[in-house]
View (cartoon, rainbow, N blue to C red):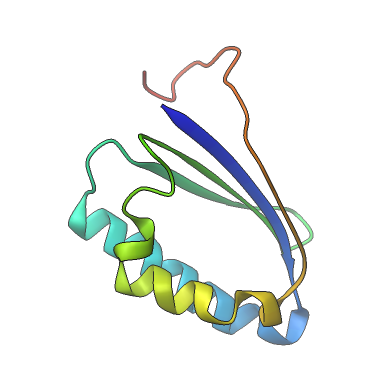
Length: 98
């Protein structure tokens, strides 16, 4: 299983638009239920910073095929002040499934 963590900070003037687009992605993932995909978005306490955690076989997997994800990604660079991406491995976990 591949893993990826993406952290980013949204420009304040784009926050509401970003949240609408992000919710649409999670709604489409919940509706289509792509096999093997785990996708979680965390919003940090500053309200503008986010962390996406994605796990699945052969990432980015089904995400680019989802219409809502394509809309979300279309102007992401313009909405964000900074972005970084890295892989990771799980050392231990409790309550997050297998």
